Length: 302
Image 1 (spheres, helix red, strand yellow):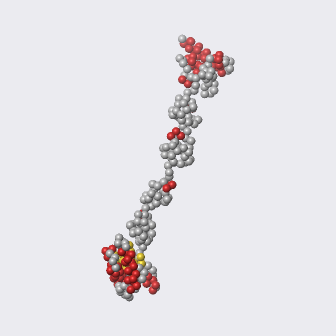
Image 2 (image 1 turned 45 degrees about the horizontal axis):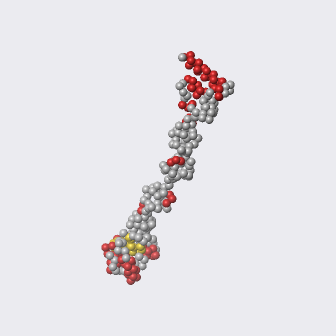
Image 3 (image 1 turned 30 degrees about the vertical axis):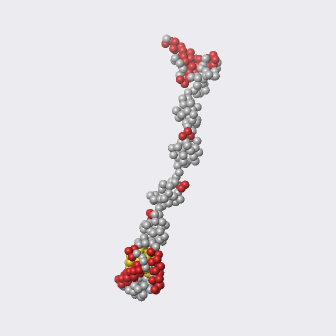
């Protein structure tokens, strides 16, 4: 039996060599053919000598030596060339047997709900473009009316920083939140003092002039319309005289204004009188004009 096996191997080898030299025809050699009668060839384009040999040495041909090259997942790419085995039936593949990703977004066409995504765009697991939020405020760029918001700042639905009291100074920078509507504020969001120009007093006293009373009457009418506003009446003097005397005089003048506003119907509990003397000049005291400007009464929002 051992001699028979050896003879078969030898005969198979000789037949293969003779066939490849063109001495025998395919029909004579009896090499395997496909359904159309064409000779099965290996990946090198040669007739299947190895397959033919196996027919003699084994009970049957090797699996890959049937009438066609194996393509287990049916994607049109032979198993020995398929870099993506197990491709689902019916999907389009490239030359390596891998599913197509036509727009190159990392999501294969069969799962891409948004084909044609621009190159480089960030997409979700469905292949749809994720809109950017460059400043990270939670509002996408296409709807962000205030791009470049600082990290951590609270914003509205338009991506703009909150200004809760509507004074034009965002909450993050507002040192005086809840400023009443319409009140003019400084860059810190605090109400600017209102200088009551023309509110003067008799010389070296706290007695209001007639002109001052006329002005304060209009002020009282305005304040009565805003009973929610609390006011500090600030009295100031120039630098002539002692600091202690000026402090006392400014307090008397502030008290005088408070009493007069109260007599005109303003809620007195909303008014605080405070004298600052010569401590807060707004211009130089070296000139008569400067000293006149420093002698003033201010209304400050609390």
